[in-house]
Length: 190
Image (tube, rainbow, N blue to C red; front, top):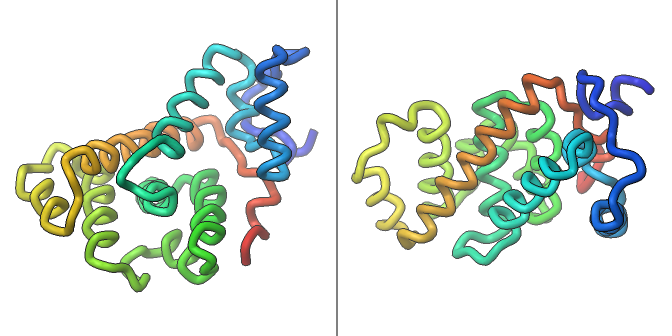
């Protein structure tokens, strides 16, 4: 197995055979995405951990929210940019390109979201996610009020904080275990 074929630098073999529900989930990924994301394969050494990770990801990124899917992916990219997470910048940069239909936006988000032509709502959301990533202990009411001032509800603020928190956690895990993105992400939606 080459380094790019292996999802992490760790030797944690996938459960084999996969339980039927897990195999079905992986088949859905293949049908919808054309691949099984390496992050899922990395967690597949322990089905309980995989299911827990997938449930949290699916709730935060696909569940009902005042944030669009693009908003959530943009938060993931900004957090990952601050943390220099190669896996998430590659995978979620591709998602921003796909959801926005704008490959330039995807690249700007990866490099420096401030260079992108964002509306006041998006800018406030991403500024908050960046502050949370760099120095969450300094967040005060005026930071939350700035989000309210551009139209976010308190529930939206909860979602922004949780998406940013999720990516801060996953970035650290991905970097620590040298998790590698699927090669396919590099050329998607360009």
